[in-house]
Length: 42
Image (cartoon, rainbow, N blue to C red; front, side, top):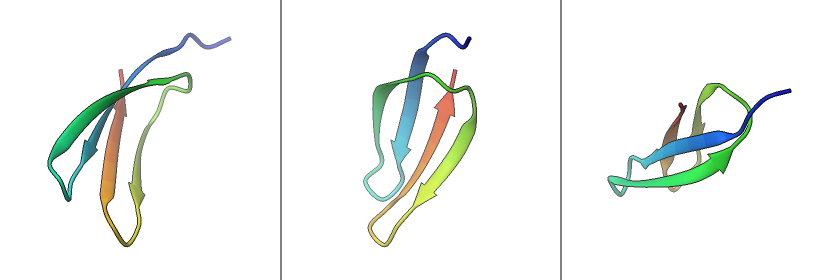
């Protein structure tokens, strides 16, 4: 069983940060034609 926590999301194209709920513990990168997102599960 994994406990939920928070995710720090940085939207590189806009330089903005936001927090979202998450359950899996990992670090990942998302990219599409509009922006790149690096998210850190802490």
